[in-house]
Amino acid sequence: MKTVALDKAVALIPDGASLMVGGFMGVGTPERLMDELVRQGKRGLTVIANDTSCPGRGIGKLVTAGAADQFVVSHIGLNPETQSKMIANDIKVELVPQGTLIERIRAGGYGLGGILTATGVDTLAEEGKRKIELDGRQYLLETPIRADFALVEAFLSDYYGNLTYAFTARNFNPVIAMAADTVIVDAAHIVPVGMISPDHVVTPAVLVDYLVAH
Image (cartoon, rainbow, N blue to C red; front, side):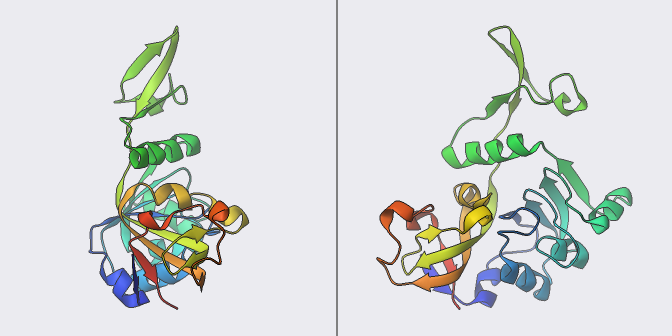
């Protein structure tokens, strides 16, 4: 794990990269990383997240700035800009049921070949997907999702990169930290090693590649 300045961390992300971003309606989203992506003028990003938040907050900043042209989300949040850009075909949005989305990401992180879910059977969601019958019930085979980068917000990090989260900001963050080639973390507080009890570590340091310096 390396500690890097904010601008250098975001400079690691090339145009066209795929990003997993933590957060639920902006709660648990690394806002400083969002701001820096916009400031550096990133383009052509694919964003994998729970939602697109709302204008001026979290992933909504990327929508407004035109930084991403593809989103894989469970819903668009409260973001009329996402809706209007979808309708105008300026961006592509793939909607995935929330439970299916997080389990596909988990499968990507755990090295699984996919998951079986009954969600979406006999609906438009099954188009192009393999159906498998198990014990007399039909399931869809949903494939794993991974990304080039995971952008994670934590409440605490120690100098090694062990992470803990605050309340509901935990949401997608620990799971996406398992499913990306490079993990960049912005923590609200960075503390000496030993200040976080081993029992309280949610994301171990071995998963963290870069920690944004304050």
